Image (cartoon, helix red, strand yellow):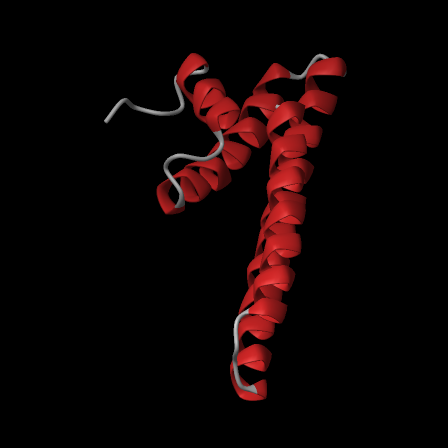
Length: 111
């Protein structure tokens, strides 16, 4: 799922750039600019926290596979799957690779 990680980083950077441009162009008060900046930063911070936990769970699952412990790997991948399900529920059109991984591994039901 490394491609989705790359896509996510690209989207985050693009969002930040566009948001900064719009914030400079659109006439807003200093309070509105401050509120928007706070909102944007919180979104980015929450995504980083999410991906750190998902990256950790997936990495531990891959490590368990390399060590020959498929039962432990399954537990770690199930934890990662729960995070992906939450992300997909919030933004259904994003994370295509994660959605496909969930379907292929039978961790995600078709809606």
